[in-house]
Length: 408
Ligand code: MLT
Image 1 (cartoon, rainbow, N blue to C red):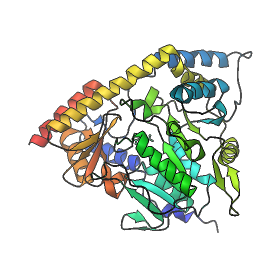
Image 2 (image 1 turned 90 degrees about the vertical axis):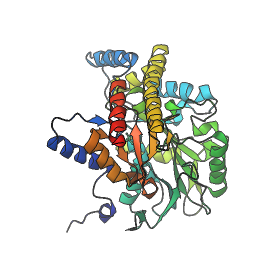
Image 3 (image 1 turned 180 degrees about the horizontal axis):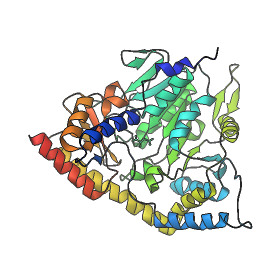
Image 4 (image 1 turned 180 degrees about the vertical axis):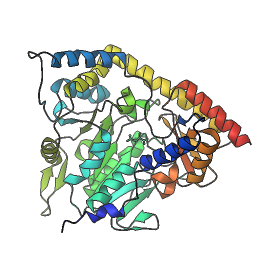
């Protein structure tokens, strides 16, 4: 008799954003005349930068001719893209990362979800709350979390974020093997200073911990004093893996391209206590289970690093951040407290009521979709997340509908 992986039965019935999509579809079916504005899932709405489109077209044309056609590429990504990433995203900011420490992939969602496979099933894991659900759910699937009781998995150490600590969790008070961190944070928009991040790096060095650092939203940082990469912190090469994405930076949510950085100096240990290269384990996993991002997509991603590409990406990000300003000002004027939106495309709003009811009320009265904070963990209860990814016009309309609805 074939048996299922029963760890899947410990998961919530559906993925957060699928759950929301179902509710929105039901609303649309019963209100066909109402226009829905989506400020829920962080999905970009503006077209790819022109430099990316141009490179995309050229690469497609290359694929149309035998002499320039390309079949399988290197699983880790083409050298032209890995070099451009290392030079522009790391070396230019004083972070010592080389092209051969970069693994190009089809998304930070996949990478942050898959990375746990190369670590022991019994390792002790700490996950922030609230949190991007992929980190937790993939550990549930793997069987690392124990049972779900009273809103939490028994064997996970939760790092609580709340209004008191500004949604920057305290360091664990005992040794942990694997810690997930995300800054600028999804969902709260909270940011971490270099000094604060250094305390995590020091903790990790002391306890032989690996930090899984999700920096998918670094392009939205406006404050020059904040770190864009964990490798700006001394010692991080020995303790951290970093995840980056072109999805939000350059509008690649539908095009798919991202990367993960694993320094060659990073080690984890065998049961006997012998150090082993994490880079070589991930390389083995990546080349076995993944066959690379398509050539045109990688050419398109590399165009982000040209002079024209950099300018166009900056304009794109600035446009979304102008939306974030608009949302922050509107929420502030309505008397709600919030964080985020200054160095992040997400605004985290205290709802004064339970977050799913607030989500339902907003959808019903205004047709605006947000994300209920409770979907990101128990500490998200009493909050909603509003995303700045939409057109200026839609964000303006959404804020005026919300203002009207909350005034009545
Ligand atoms: C989000 O809304 O949290 C993100 O868009 C989800 C993702 O990047 O997978």
